[in-house]
Image (cartoon, rainbow, N blue to C red; front, side, top):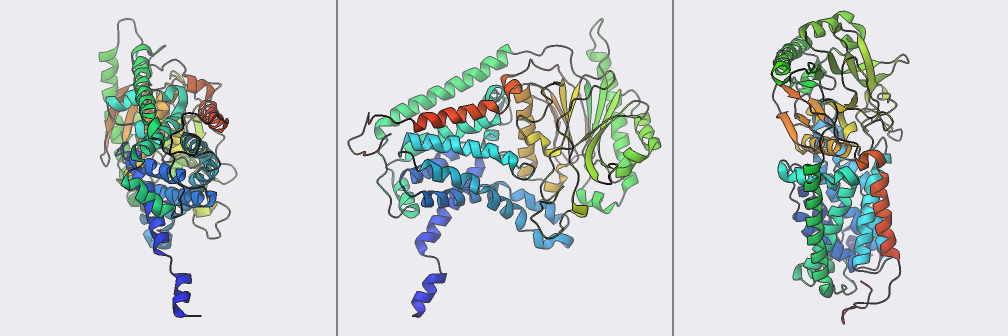
Length: 556
């Protein structure tokens, strides 16, 4: 065989490399819309070009490859911060450094590839792109069922811009949830972007690289005004609905407790090495005492005539300190905690514990003023590769095979404390699965430890999820994070107070009352599911060949 022919078998063609680079780049650039950057306009370019590529191919295989590459670029760039968790123990797991981001992206890429391939069976144009938006959202929701669930980086979280603009944009989450926000954003970005870029040199260049033997792009020029008019109207209605909710929905019932949120700022390497467990424990005790004293002063200043003193609850983060067994096995340690927190009505502390079967559980424990354990909640959603090991991995990478999972969302009814829903770490990212639907709490307590992921986008993406859960459920949230960002939100998603990354300190926040139950809180994921099915149905209904451009041979 001639050498040139041999080389051509092993060396990709330039067109193939350009195809891969273009799609990977579009996916990677799309992550700029995610927290903490929230660069939403970039989606008009990336999803617009991707939509144009889908419109110019009739090969479902080619579309599937395009979707897989786009998804791989999106999740690799969006989950880059997972590498930080491995670097903390790089001396043991140096060989695993490339796998967290690339491995998760490889697993999640089919959730974009399949929607891209399926939408090809519809006529190019608005119907195809609308179906793609619905299918993306459906498969995005399906990530809940991958391993124990991995719903990071939902595009709907891009609306959670810090400040009043974000507060306005995320209010529709109370009706349609985060997945409804994702559907609206992809639909708007793909349709507007495709019509805006149509017939431009950039679009032609992209389609020639991605689909060398492409069909002519359906001419959407005659629909451009209609698409933009509908988009502008939709954005205005969206903002008006958000503003209406902000103005008309008000808290009801008794106010929440005064939350003392303790942020110890303990580096994960220090906890793993158990270098100074006593110093860490004393740090938490000192910060708690300081916070409870401030809360008692707040009790007096905010008390109205004839009103009872508001209860005080302090929160310690997930796996707060190295002495894990103190909370479970040492009554004296629990008493010492409450003696330093004299004046507090309860303490909510994140800690590991061992169950009767000898399995570790990532838990949160509620302490009474005398140090007795009032309630225990075990984390139900375990982190793949971190807290439990998927069975298909032959090498032991999770100590002792991982942890045992709890039963799911619960509501605690502690003495003299408004009913509270405890959440551990990334359980808060699961839209529609954070409260007990049959026993709605009055507020949510989220304890977490984002030290694993460093000062990166990861903790900020996690924080956006907390804010969206507050709006979806209409419940105030108090969040204690070991290294930050500790924060409190009301049921509208307004920030009440926060403590930034890498600081040791304490927040004292009087939580407001909860809002009335939201539509999404009552019906959950059935709402975005119904919206996706309705959009798919409309896209699939055969239509007469109306409003055709003279240059178009396909249905719009």
